Image (cartoon, rainbow, N blue to C red; front, top):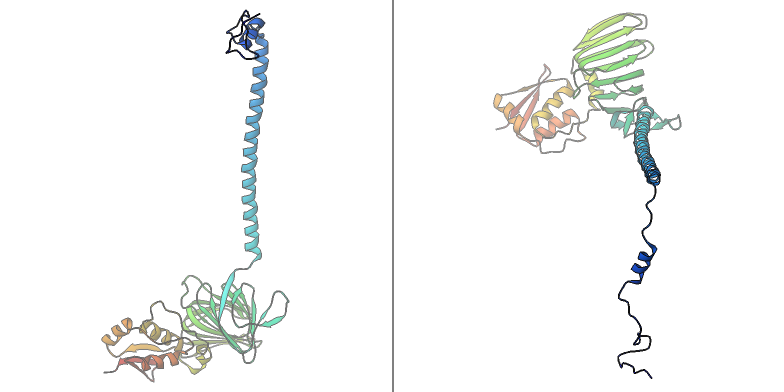
Length: 340
């Protein structure tokens, strides 16, 4: 009978068995022996297959990058084409309505019908007309202002205007000298040369009044080309008769244009700026009693609200709200002085 060790438990080695200290897995590997090395040709085939796969992946990545770049270029091209198309199909702004009195209409592009309009921006190709009680003042995007009297129809085309009938007034103030404006009429094209002028046309007569600067009548099918200077009125009949008469810059017949004047929003509301604007709108000369008065007008601020006032109303308001006073002379001069 065998004597057991109290430390042994079921499943432990019993005396008389040989205990191995080696790793069974290692014994199996040693029993199997060393694997024979594959032939070099197999290495070459595996290397060639791996290299081919690597090259295909690299090529695929390059193609993907190329396609991505081409797609980006294509998107930019498409975006550019769409923008160009938008620019071409969407006319640019040409004017903004500053003031509209009575009946003012435009030919609505959506309906092709005449509709009332009294505010907003206008694009190239806009057709405007005024009724018997209508008049309007426009601020041009490129500088200057355009005013339409009653019974007037006009087409806006950037820096040129087709005047079918009626009367307009143009003021180039705030416009670069090189940017001329053309008014196209059945009698020819009137071009401004940094000026204020009025054009009236109908089937029997073309009338051009030059308030300041000069104008040129170009390519007239009736008379060729002529020019008009400041203080001059040109009349051209349908029969080809041309006449010139003097016309004062402060003549009362300019009153319709003055009634559509809109006071500018000056960054610094110096009295001098308003006085100069008043002189330009009324066609009068501006003078000062003394040099000290002129210097004071350049630094004094107008503290009132000028909006909605006509030029002469603004002059009266300046005198009423400051120590400046004025006098209108018979020679067409506004003389500014200061109260003691």
